[in-house]
Image 1 (spheres, rainbow, N blue to C red):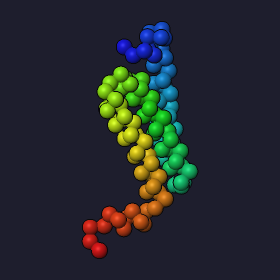
Image 2 (image 1 turned 135 degrees about the vertical axis):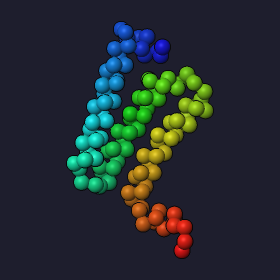
Image 3 (image 1 turned 135 degrees about the horizontal axis):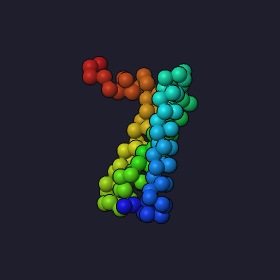
Image 4 (image 1 turned 60 degrees about the horizontal axis):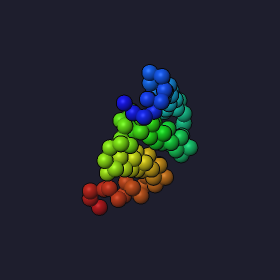
Length: 103
């Protein structure tokens, strides 16, 4: 059992975190469905993804006690991909040009 769960009564803290994760998922879905596409929307969704990833990695997957290699690799993954999503929004033509198979 992870350290935070031991500090709370019957893992109530984890239940609250889980509800918070679900709320963030609903907010992301609502934003994706209703908001006009834009840089601010993309950054907001990416920030929520990073927050959710950190909570899941640290509290539910319990990777803080695992190998530092695995822990840091997972953290890097969830910081890198939101960053790449913002880059795709900022530089779509340049990235499309870089990834073309034929010129």
